[in-house]
Length: 477
Image (cartoon, rainbow, N blue to C red; front, side, top):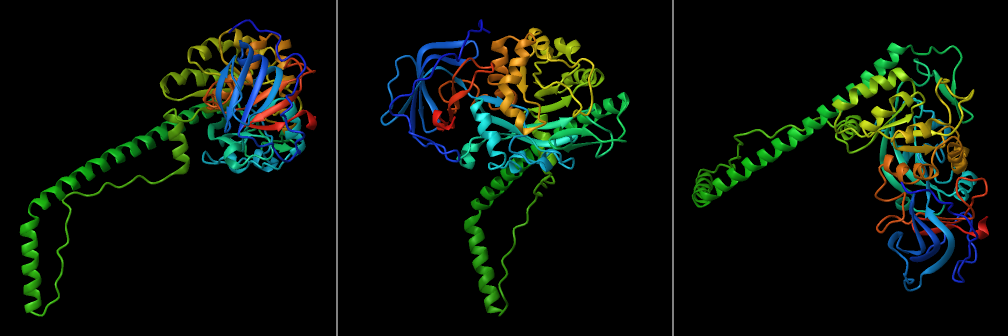
């Protein structure tokens, strides 16, 4: 990474073609935009001076220093411009019942639980903080919480614009909360250990890790069955085609035989019955469709990242001892409170860590000895990729994401790495790095113009562009 600069500082000047005002419930629609920046943060550590970003139909079509506006384009001028922030650990827009649901299955999709009209005031506040998208998640305390989705939080977007990635990650938990169902519950937005619920001992928690590996293995077996069926089906179709070609060679004789048989039947006053073709080989049977197994198969094959909420040393040690045998699985560790001793192994296996910047408190189901705000710095300094989330406890925390990340900077995390944790790395762990997190040609146009340096208390988003639409302007602030 390049040496961090003081960025997103200075005033914003808006061009005369900017919209007069924007309603809180309606995003300004335009086909083309040109954003002129004195300092354009292409990605953390990479800055272009006096550069422009050209946007058309929701996508970035050009990035450079001498760009001219497309015909009819709206122009916005700013001092510092960067990619919109992503909260990779949020509950914004998901009802408390869905968040706390402990009956979720792998096939449960958070996109179905996301309500674009819920928490409107909190979403507006999050936009003002520069957050454009979040990972929506159901079943946060469940052993398997289902598939998390990346969604944009701005009002006025249609479903295609709002849902960035429906199947982003499979969320699982290991050793979090009580061992019995109902051991932890969401109460007033907080995950609470219920009185009298039995906590798990270390052997039970390690057993959960073994069970996780077993579920991955079952998913792999299901995938093998599907692949074998596909291969057998191709072979069956090939044999059918060969048999058909063989029969066509004798089509003339077969036609004469059929005509003779039909005439004989007519002369004898009997009904003519067509001879049915009998296959010499049986069509293969398709495996039973299993939605949950489909998700585990996607995880086992690396088509979907697996995010494991895990904190304690013993479980982390058990997990890392087995990841080498899971070559295709794309792991993401969330929480990782006691992971400092395992930083070398996390880096060696290229496993990113999603940390939260909230201090542990009474609302948490457990207190962890090594949890502190310096965790992100320790991991990043060891070469581990660190994503930052607001903690997935309270929807209001998403609006605090820049301030929470700033706390990590105050506890030793390099500022450029902190910015990456809420942009490029956040996008990568959520499997949307090809669309979000940086300002590059071909990516979605999710950008922010700031009033001051980000990750400081003075920074606010004066303009936010989401999916190519201006969803926040100075008149709304």
